[in-house]
Image (cartoon, rainbow, N blue to C red):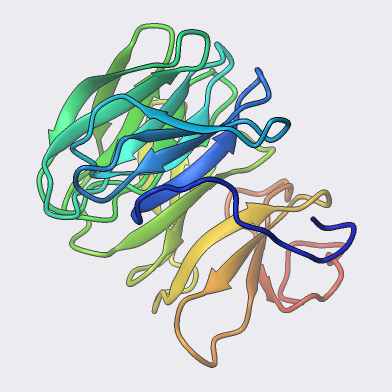
Length: 239
């Protein structure tokens, strides 16, 4: 409870979930990562917990589409599975699209065209998931194992892959195109979040790395990066 800075345990579930998201029906859905773990359903009002869907595990991330459905990406854990689609209207779950052997993807970002774009964690290309067509297509070059981890959609319409061992990757929904930006070439970051001022803050995965942020509203294609909590610069230049 953020109001009291307290926490409590609700229900009983097996260990091994890889993300969760609040659906329009007010229910929280958790994504199964470990083998034998099903989709979890948590009602924040009644505190009721239940499960449904496939029990193979192997997914991470939770992407809420404009149609109200939730999508998760295959991320292995030694399990080869396709993408996962969850329908909160029926509490049903089905698989779709290509499977990923080895590390696959770690969620994706929603672009202005209503489709999700995600950069690879494993030795795969990037993906575009169309919730309306119910399709998944792969594009761009395979970047190697543990190249990126996480994606953030910017107000510009671009989706940025968080660099784990390579530089930041930009996914342009016009094309689509996958481009290495050259920013943060050593990587070392995991996940990120978009703030109200248009900056994307990325969380350090390795000790002694600073927080990093990208001026995603800059008018030029590859704006500068700033570190720490420095206010947004008036021009696209290092803070």
